[in-house]
Amino acid sequence: MSWHDDYFHYQQETAMEEFLDEQLRRIAEEPVFYYLATYGDAIEARVRRCIEQARTLTEAGYPGAPLVRAAAGIEVTIRFFLARPLLQGAFLSDDWAQLISQKILNGRTAEDRELLPAILRNWKIDITSVRLPDSSQAWEQIVTKVWRRRNDYVHKAEDAPLGDAVLAIDCLEALLSQVVDPLAQKLGFTRERTGCWSVVTVQNPSKFPDLNPPRKFAREDPFEG
View 1 (cartoon, one colour):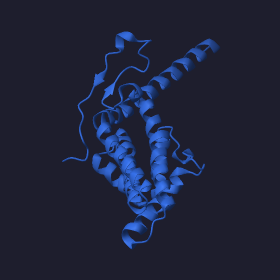
View 2 (cartoon, helix red, strand yellow):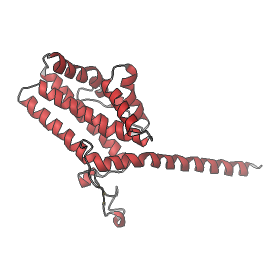
View 3 (cartoon, helix red, strand yellow):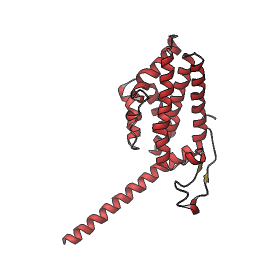
View 4 (cartoon, one colour):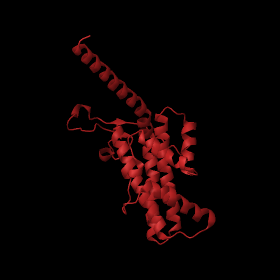
């Protein structure tokens, strides 16, 4: 076999590997896309309410309630925006997705706390690089402070300093802007133009005007039923 034959064979193998990788990526992304197109608007509405109410309560000087509200928003974001759709995209059943989501949220061991970063790394998202306004690491603050202080406030009736509520709100907003938003863009959502998950246009409508009529998906609420 000549050098040219070897090179041609190598090119064929490389092209085939790239093709298979692309097809596997699309197969994995498709259930995630449809999950978020269907449920994303209901999930985001609930999370945004958590942020709005937490801010209002914080401004009114009631730190415990906004801490609980923002922590709930974090849990909804992790469970319904990240863990469940991404795990189902990995061909796990809804029961498995729910079980792993619970382990992530309970976070009793170091292995549990590593589950979400490991899942997101498969999607080229590094949650450990998400930073808060004070440059601290959002995920570390969530697992070591926000959830712990929320639990102490709820289950031990301990006081909650105002800073705890502000921290929880900052963590929730960082998850949305630095994890959920990039994931949505990666999957092809166009929320910056449509304002919602359930209506999707092409990424560049001026470049592809013939493809611009939006795709519309029926909205459902994962919290009902």
